[in-house]
View 1 (cartoon, rainbow, N blue to C red):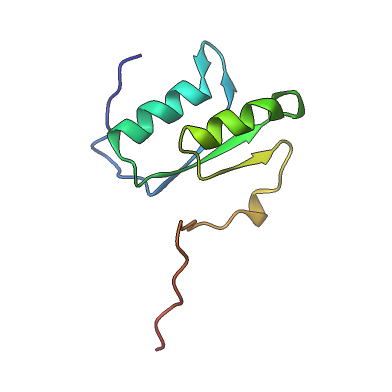
View 2: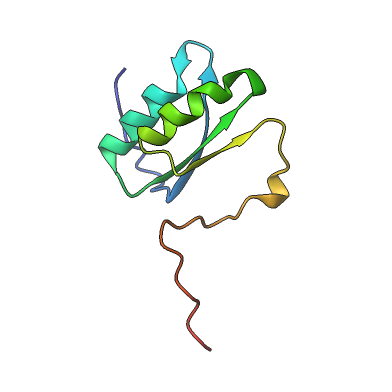
Length: 88
């Protein structure tokens, strides 16, 4: 797989399917982490793919969510070490 970095954006997090046509989400995860380990990658899995979740977590995934899921419940800014918001 050839890795390229988009010049149009610098993501802080990625929502990545475990299984895609012709691609392994875990391999894409590994490529992302090689490019920039600070990117939080959240894996999306179907029920039959939940067994791949431990491998994804060991490969650097921030977490995983099972399908189907409701986008309204995803935190738009996941952080590895949550920090309190500064007082305004």
